[in-house]
Length: 184
Ligand SMILES: C[S@@+](CC[C@H](N)C(=O)[O-])C[C@H]1O[C@@H](n2cnc3c(N)ncnc32)[C@H](O)[C@@H]1O
Image (tube, rainbow, N blue to C red; front, side, top):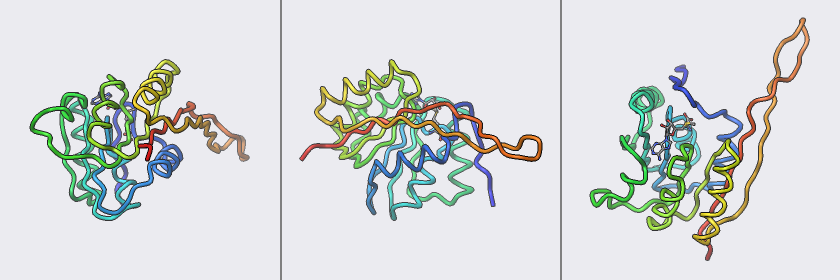
């Protein structure tokens, strides 16, 4: 069994991925964007939840793109395009003509432009992970402006760790999961 090749900032912790993907509501055949894919671990988990996804894994960092390529190969991820560059430029470029059904945004640089473009691309659900309160506020405000704001979930995970032959809990950094959904 392969281990995920990691990069700074990733992989996202499995508990956070689980809640994020449960909020995203992927369906078979969806076009799924993993914005700021880091290691690609969110895409790898997404591919277990829905069949025949088309995955667009986007990152601006070379080390992230390399890790994603290796991880996708090791975990047999098919139908994936790994795209290098700033997400707001890539998704908005004339050569990127595809629509997006669902997006996970783990990289929040230019979050306002990224959200606007995802809405233009007809995304029915968008989940953003943020650790900084300023990013959370900006994300909520932008989602409200775009008429897609649904909810924010704040998650604090503590993980068991051995101590003197017994068990203690060590806290992980808290994460805000901001959910946007297309209103009917
Ligand atoms: C916290 S890491 C993501 C971790 C990832 N979910 C994982 O499981 O490995 C954030 C990543 O987003 C990328 N990033 C942030 N904003 C971006 C943007 N606007 N366009 C492209 N990549 C972006 C960073 O380069 C970084 O690799």
